[in-house]
Amino acid sequence: MYSPTLQTKWGFLLTDTQAQQFAALEVLYPEWNAKINLISRKDIDHLVEHHILHSLAIAKLIRFEPGTTILDVGTGGGFPGIPLAILFPECHFTLIDGIGKKVMVAADIAQRIGLTNVECLHERAEEEKRQFDFVVSRAVMPLPDLVKLVRKNVHHKYKNALPNGLIVLKGGNLDAEIRPFAKVAEVTEISSFAHQPTTDSATDVFASEWYKEKRIIYLPI
View 1 (cartoon, rainbow, N blue to C red):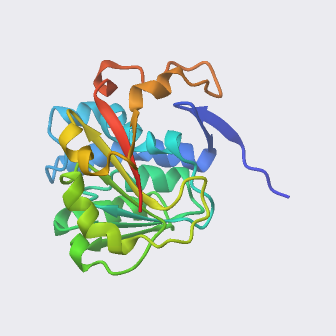
View 2: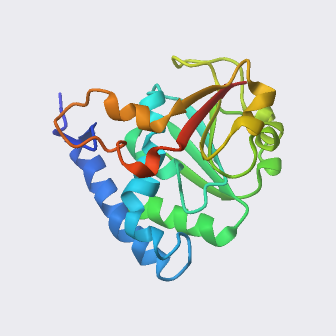
């Protein structure tokens, strides 16, 4: 039986294929960003820390089981969907955004790195009627507004350690947004992952100053 060679990167255990796909993102996003302003010119220099690893912080909260379906709302150029799709090749990711040129970039990058578990669609959340195990998003809109839009997209039968729901990456003061869901929402400081043991002695990738006000909100639906 074939057993892929594994290596550790950023504290994640990866196959050679996954490591090559992540390395390709570091080339393809700057290439596209020179044509379409997906990421600010200043921020593109911090692509790994501010975008790829920020997306992968979700994988520190939950390891999606094979067969899990995930909807990425407001994906932009493919965050957090594409990094997560690389990490979880046995899950299926649907990436949607209302801006067509951004979806075009996400689709092109997914195709060029050989992702077969990603579907990229030019549509708004209101238009997506299918149901998924989880909805993920990265600072697209206030939480109450997002919940109203995607509640219809989460089905109730679950297979993961966490019940199905919404997982959002957010920063800043979130008190007002979370207040309506205070009894059920779980808020995790991304910087707390820096103290977790990793599979090697690499520098803690979530220990930088940039993550100090970055959080993951999990809301079961």
